[in-house]
Length: 485
Image (cartoon, rainbow, N blue to C red; front, top):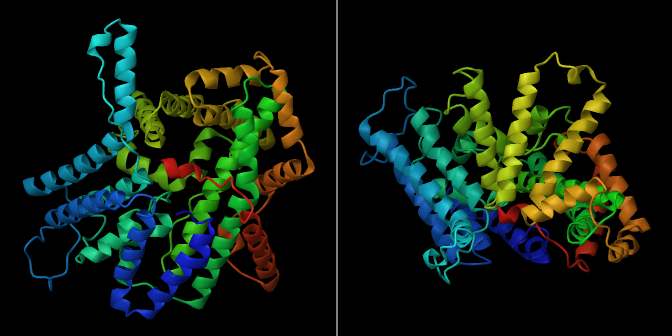
């Protein structure tokens, strides 16, 4: 089930909201959890058991870490002291949590990739007899990368003393399974919503802002991301492109992935507000960044901070010298690339970003680049991000290489690609392309736009929502890019 569907908007969401506000307060987490499992299991009910298993493991590990297993339910759980002393059982519990979560994620995400590459290697070495012949293929559960990171942060936060363990299993289940951010983020760390799970406010103002977030995110998805996605698909699936077509296609993809993901995030934040939860900001005009370092402070902020706090800093961060810091930075970005998907393209995407981050640190704050006009810095950064999106979008390494050749006029321009002009260079697509660029670089963020809702803003947002609803009745192209992660 996706947010941008009649089923969700006209049936699922109204029923959930009605039941949530009608049931007693103590039963709201149970209701929200139940509907979240329905939402997640809509495509494949078997995925529900996997999420429940991950939830149960981390819940039990959290109790052990908090020294609370077997205690009376009347005794409140307390945060551990940050003195670094932990018992052997506590250390084992956090290790079990991390290993189980990473094992589940690794199996479902990388089993097929590992088998395919092993067989390719054996074939290249002429050892076909050693190939692993199996019909068994693993289906990737939706959003597994998001909820495993989210669930794992719970036990780690408790172990570090950054959060208090939760007593009721249904409360923890609600945190892990909450459908607004379940399958495509943002990644909500337990310490960010721990107090809200115990007590939160439900106000008309908060609900109204949530509706505003949802309508604007829905408009981003339907009116911009889907249109730019069609342009990008035609460019990346063409056998050959002219230089202009290649650049047009990769910029269209940059707009698609931004409006698709930020639009989903807006809808997720909006839905959270409708249920009283305040989720953290996830995007902050990333294409206005003046460097790749700044880009990662603005793009997918929940993932960036997760990788920093749970991977980069534990590896030593920059506390063990510059060389170690550069290695840690590159390693984190490589793992971040593989987190997105099991292919060599994602690995290279991570290496590309990691290398750029290291180069920026080597150059320092007084480099020639830093003295360039801000517009030039933004332009250069955006072009570098576009190069990385080629790896992100192309199906294979050879496809990526061919697309780079097209970008620099060294590829084969297939005459049949002229058909792209007929479809994409019409008034509707060109207007959407320009409109997307205007929003990217000049419009306020949804987070800021919705702080104060005037009647003029309300009319505008309702208009966007109504037009978007009308369009999805005829729109067959409606993917969510980050569902596959």
